Amino acid sequence: MENTPPRRVEHHQTDRGYVPVYATGVVEQPWASYSRTDHDVWDTLYKRQRELLPGRACREFLAGVERFGLGDGGIPKFADLNKVLGKTTGWELVAVEGLLPDEVFFDHLANRRFPVSWWIRKPEQLDYLSEPDLFHDLFGHVPLLLNPIFADYMQAYGRGGMKAFGIGPEALMNLTRLYWYTVEFGLINTDEGMRIYGAGIVSSKGESIYCLDSPAPNRIGFGLERVMNTRYRIDTYQQTYFVIDSFEQLFDATRPDFTPIYAQLKQQTAHAAADVLVSDRVFNRGTREGFATDADT
Ligand code: PHE
Image 1 (cartoon, rainbow, N blue to C red):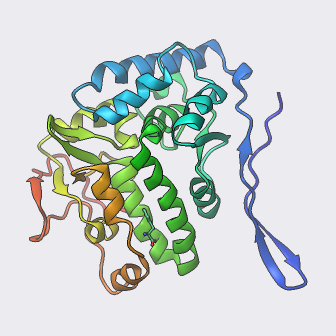
Image 2 (image 1 turned 45 degrees about the vertical axis):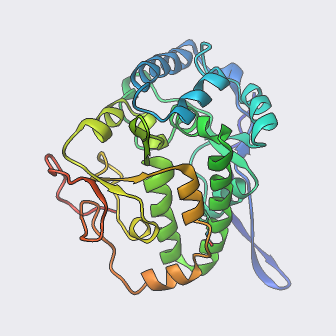
């Protein structure tokens, strides 16, 4: 099967000037081309996280993993998962080559399409890689797309992204921080205790343990503007995790129009990733042990 590389957004000259042409970056999942090693990598990572996550990941996430049968053996076929998604929350997985331009990514989410990198990491990259692969995208992100509220949150985020893109780079940065501290690295407070829902955590063995067990990072109650104004780490475990009380809380807090919030935040300097503020609801004030001292993103 032939793989077409994703096209970037191109600008085409028309009579009215240059207009961006949205390329979707979507390819077909080249399922037949996965090697035995690729399938083994999936099985190994799956087994490791499946054993680790009960009692750590929230039950909505674990329920999604079971419902999809992600551990049936070998790399799942997106077409099979789409049958389940289609009849529950109406989301659709689309295979992509890797990270997409912001506006293309937002457009997919706004239309309930979730882009998943089709390729999987090599056996020597089980613990870390710097860009999202199939295991992160699929195991990390897709189970919660079966949760109706989270599914709606992701779509609303995509729509919000289109808007922020039109407002400017600072707005986009504020919105990206929200994604980072919720969708990627979010914790949730439940009756049974603090649990993980962030995809960047559940797809990482080390951070699945660290985020809940280590005294080093801060664990702070979620606040919309607090999060949107906080820098983050892209190369180490997080220095702060923000804790939501429920997916409803997250969805409700992000419902208002962000336009005035973007304008306000533009006047302020961002908090460092490790900061604790007097206004914070602190679950754990981190010891900062082992923290990188160079600047965060
Ligand atoms: N309410 C946000 C806005 O007006 C959109 C949004 C919703 C963003 C949910 C993120 C998550 O921009």
